Length: 208
Image 1 (cartoon, helix red, strand yellow):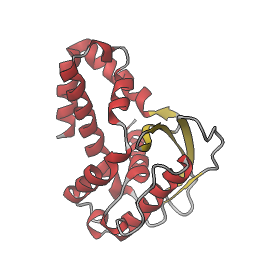
Image 2: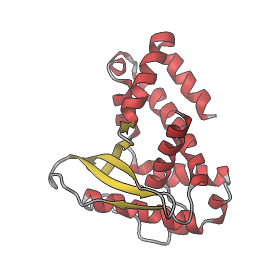
Image 3: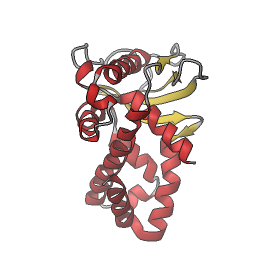
Image 4: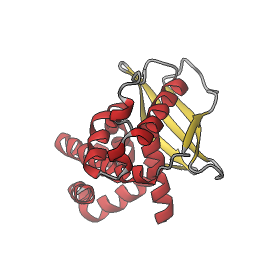
């Protein structure tokens, strides 16, 4: 299980990481076709990780800054949290919904920040040709990630929705396990035991 989690958040880091070394490049265009948008992010990921000395050295403060400022704008955390919470979302107050979204955001941000240290110079990511409906508002983009020069690639799928601001990612599939599905089981168990406030407290503690 630990190996899966480590690999899961490595893929997240690859999918969304941007840093100072990549800022000189053109920013990803959320209005572009979804597979191009994802590839633009991926290209900046690798450029950043291979050129930013602080990130390569495992400077968590720097990595957290990268995540908070340059990654999160591309993710719809409210939708991710709502779907992960499932039917329990309807029972939450407006304040609890806000607190839960913020807590989950912090948990994922801090967790996959650590995955930057697992990326090597040989790591690469390539989106596959888009096979869906280009006019759809909800799509899946497939990609393959190679961590080492002689290793077999891993499959990594992104689920995106079209918003007025362009495409945003709200779910990711690593090795046939969707992030939302994985967390929904954990959320349900925690809520059944300690309620929504208990889940919020647990997520905030995990993010520390």
